[in-house]
Image (cartoon, rainbow, N blue to C red; front, side):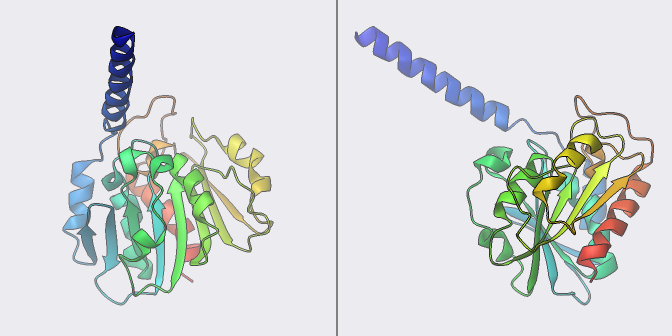
Length: 238
């Protein structure tokens, strides 16, 4: 009997250790791209144990986005693609550092992240891939005015939410394909804005290299960034 109990405990410990090791092996962000943002005089970057905040060094617009990374993707991998909207519109971006690098394990309230930018009075929540699915779940927070999805879609019904919604798809996305995003359109408000960027793949929403199952992007990183920023400006630039 004792041997059986010990064996069971050992198995549980091994499973827990295995999950922890797996969750902490992330798709690393491009270091050079992140450093480019850190050294940009137009963007002030603050990193804490729970987020990376990018605030305009000049006049802030009062609009902010709490952005949730995709599963097991380095939060710093999104700095470059999201920093241009900070420069262009004065919006504030707070990229979360999810618990165990998985958004669904992160049960902290949205206020944990909005507190990093107390001067913002108009908040959007958003995310990439599974981070976007989690963002949909946080969109009912009273502080939220809108939702931004990068290669993602909602599993919960937001049709009556009254939220301002922007959903960006990539024509070369091999994971959250344009077809899957279109199929989930019914979960969003009728006036949600769906944008498809020609040549953008799933990993192109960030800068972390090749992702299994994805297609190859046919537009360069700089153009990916510009087109993502153009789409974001329709909601964050107002």
